[in-house]
Length: 196
Image (cartoon, rainbow, N blue to C red; front, side):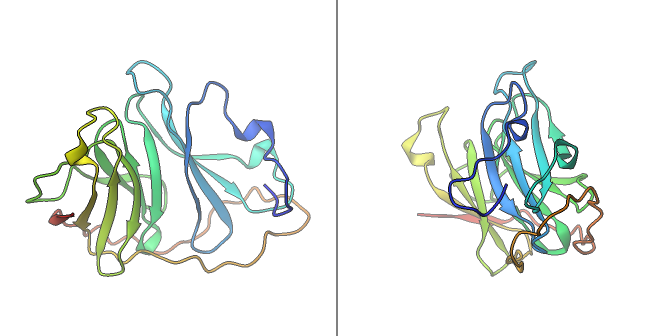
């Protein structure tokens, strides 16, 4: 995980049996990289996991930390950081958005924008519009419904956070992950609308 051109992530950063590395994001303070492993879509298979890895030149396997795991079939995909350390995770398999607090504990799930004729349909990625809403892209990969291939907007009363970081840290490894990304608010709302 270096910034040098052409460098490759170490093999251990691809957990054995994993399917689909997704949702790569640098956390707002710039100290860690977050990414997801979707796991399998069938229940009883491989669980999906959100991982954290420090941004250092030579991370070790011991630096890889599990933030949150999801049951097999939920398939975590795209992620975005909200205010106060919240992490919004698109669950392509269960058609929901999971909201984690800064400790990796799930505090809420969104099942779709209220009043929209288009539901979450294998949501793939998430981003903030800067006006309190979360934008969600639908894969619609399982239903193959072209009418569901859309960008949806769900009001969550959160403007999201921009990256404020410097370069990758130099020599040395970091095994400390107690970064304070803020305090949890826990006030999300479910109204939203569909962007055509």
